[in-house]
Length: 295
Length: 278
Image (cartoon, each protein chain N blue to C red):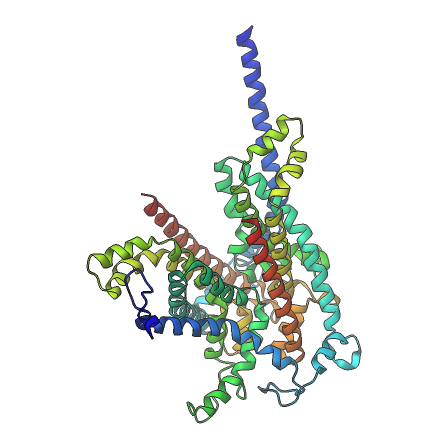
């Protein structure tokens, strides 16, 4: 009798657990339905459209055009060039600041953090507009540089590559600093102390101990910035003044101006695949690093 | 000048030898914060052109913004666009926060295998380049006649805000002991009641900050708005972007100043909330 009860009890518990399981899955359903209907299906549809030719049959012509057309090659080159340069300058400016913040007390670091977060929270359009104002021919940067005698004539900074780069570095910098700073804070200060007590000069202790330990954070920041740059639209469109054409802008103009869904979709698929590939590599690197820290 | 000989690092670097890092960091922080602020004096300029510093001061661009419904002030109805943006942003809070919170609760309690499978799909709106999300949505909305509708905008913005809500609420639930709900239920409360009365009050600060983020995400969103809104339901960011790309209207400086005040206010609130929830 007792055994039977126990079995009944066990069965009831299993059933309850299964029902709970479905309940929890059910709670995620509204979210999954929205993502499925509004991301996965539309993008699947774009994927399909990219293989539809002008006459409506299956073809690779959208992809062939991309490989054969000089205009597309130039767009790919511009996109990669701007993304790589932006990422490089972000690292150049972001690393020293993140390092500085990791070296001072938490209280002061939090104050500096507000400085990093303010631009992060300020609308992208506001920051892009601000650079448009600053970099104009009669803008503040030019007038100060002329007054100081650094340049004899105002330089055209906007509506070209340099303006686009300046604006994008400013917008992307917080994305590099946040993961890098978090990583640097987590580095055990005793490691550096040990190196210096064993006779390393401060410079050597930094390069042989601190810098290698900060690479995971740096890499995470670099990859985030690079991926965001690849799909960037607003800042190059405004500060580039139509002269700097990146992939996202071409996708948009293909649809807005030419109603050419096939061409836009094919370019979109390439952008998506490159982005996903980089994020996939990033996820491997980050998990490898966590594994390393645990062991 | 004894303070220059103070040690400032674990490797016994003296402040004197590290001043360069302090200066460099100060310059970088300056470059991060100050450029955006240039729009504030610009917005009080009386000139049509982007000269800095302005020669004469006026409120004309604020007038242009606040009284844009008077046709003579230009063809951009900024007030209507602001109303659309505010309405969409508030509605986005009410779509993204509950859906994201429910999903975070479900995901936190479900098996780790399901979690590992679903999480990447759920944060996909953050991973996919936003331009693709936008043209995908545009295509989708054309089929359902949802282009230029408030509903379309709210759903599009919610899609981008939901992953942020999910991440915020999941990290709050990670620090929360789910056994408290078990206790409530063993005392006779139903699961929804246990959630509302026991869990919800303890994660409320995270929910408020998730709502703030949802609001700001929607209010600042440009690309989706550019594709799926228009006509009477144009958002403020869409109007600003088009005005910036085509001609430079100094009214944008006035709007930018107002936006800086709003976002700084929200940043301060969220910082206060996060210090409170710790």
